[in-house]
Amino acid sequence: MQFGIFTVGDVTTNPTTGRTVSEHERIANTVEMAKLADEVGLDVFATGQHHNPPFVAPANPAVLMANLGVVTKNIILSTSTTLITTTDPVRIAEDYAYAQHLAGGRVDLMLGRGNTGPVYPWFGKDIRDGIPLAIENYALLRRLWNEENVTWEGKFRTPLQGFTSTPRPLDDIAPFVWHGSIRSPEIAEQAAYYGDGFFHNHIFWPPQHAAQMVQFYRERFEHYGHGRAQDAIVGLGGQVFMAESKAKAMETFRPYFDHAPVYGGAGSLEDYTRQTPLTVGTPDEVVEATLGFRDYVGDYQRQLFLIDHAGLPHAEVMHQIELLGTKVVPQLRAEMDIRRGAGVPDAPTHASLLAARAAQATDTPSADAGQMGGVETGVPRAPKTDDVTGTRAEDR
Image (cartoon, rainbow, N blue to C red; front, side):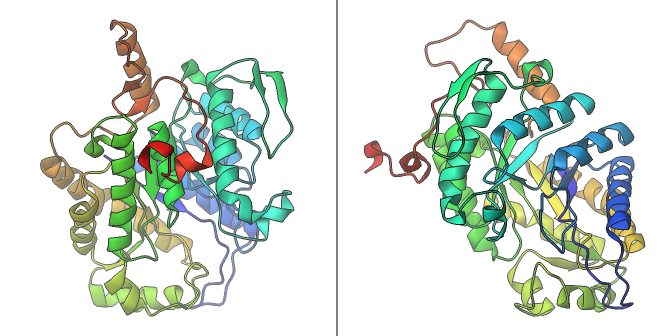
């Protein structure tokens, strides 16, 4: 199982000091976060994609990932998310393949629609087309990574004639894709259709909602013939803040929570810690709460924590990363390994996908070949809208 952190890259005034870091300082701090996460043994560092204040997360995350590929050694560099709706899939194919080469394969993507309405028209899109854009653009992205001389025509961008995206993915293995969503079952359906990973952000909403979304994805993953429901590749987000006691953690974190742009004053800290997966307490309490996620989503492959938003001082953020790497994740790894069901697959990596392809090459192909361990090795047709909403004719 993979454990790591993700950032939304907000530039928020520290409510306890009134100080606001500069954009340059926030960007430099993000690099330091990733370096420390690598040093303390976390598995994943993920960055969001934003085009609007108060966020300074990169408009093109591949730029940051390429830089981090040079200054880190082991950690997987991911996105949280890449906007598949307002970013040209040709640019995604080119930029992330380039970053993949620079990072030696330590790159994967989490694709999402984006829920900031004004961003869509900035790129000539309409938020009401969010789901169709996600379907069409991802179908094209897959072809660009799996084929050369692509001829293609769709609704939302100009046609391509004999186009080859360069550079080609490292070792001809495209970055593994997670489809990220908080509330859209159509995105879970898309992930299941292709046999890709599904990442549920797992903040804001109660556990019952996460359980329903993940279960739907698992059922559809099995429906499309990628393996058992428990073989589906699931990731969860989450948010934590830790101190030596729960009382101290609540006292310290409260002003930051109250002014956090991602919460917007929608409820109290007590409400959120009681009704959602937000955990504020000691490292042991974070371990206990996180182990409880498995009770309602089953065995899963990736757990990421948000730990740096709302104007938290950089020194405190680095302390939180230290606690995760030294106090929390070692316990979680040990306990998750003990509790893990038989045959549950690991989280895919570039190395595991390369090994799977090599193993498949030594096997005799069968008539129904094309799937291995829940990871697709062929290229299916692009799903129609009815496919990803789960209303195919055969299901009606």
